[in-house]
Image (cartoon, rainbow, N blue to C red):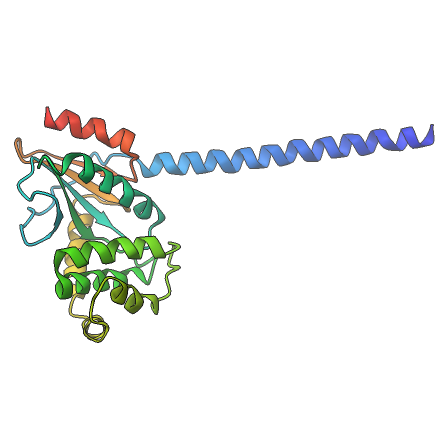
Amino acid sequence: MKMEKIAVPVAIVLAGALIAGAFYLSNIKSAEVKAGAQQATAQTNSGKIRPVSPTEHILGNPNAQILLVEYSDTECPYCKEFQSTLHQVVSDYGSSGQVAWVYRYMPIAQLHPRSEKEAESVECAGQLGGESAFWKYLDEVYNVTPSNNGLDPAQLPKIAKDVGLNVSDFNSCLSSGKNAQIVQADYQDGVQAGGNGTPFTVLIDNKTGTQTPLEGAYPYAQLKPMIDALLK
């Protein structure tokens, strides 16, 4: 009888702990969902970005009807996720020449201090190895980094070597800092156009001249209908 009296309060305490734990996890999940939704919010009061130049980093036909101009931070986890989405877009629409992807730099140094130098390193890859090396290097940076300022700078020359670049030339380019102005010009353009975070993407319809700004890592299932609507 005495054991039964003890067991009842213990059971109540355990039940309360389980309920509290479930409530706590539920709140975390809700916060994550809310954060994700906020990341995928379209900008409504933004200015226009600068015109796309044929000399920029473009994957696909530069004369495509739709240009997806992405402002990105290599240490942003959302950008890492969005990288595969945009590759799928180019895979589905690029061969027909309908859509092309333009990559611009937008390192958020306040959150990711290493991202500025990483952006400069990506530009070095393009200057040393051409557009093929640029995209290979960029993809590998996103592949290797754990995001959120987690990529060891010592990995950058290794990535350069992996994509076939001369490591000595790469290190000279990176240490010179000569690409800092290019990176900052992209960053300022993105901010002036209304980009409050990354990835910040602007869909340019070359047929009508309209620009549709989007903020966040839109999944392919949501991005595709937007592209299809513009193509029609």
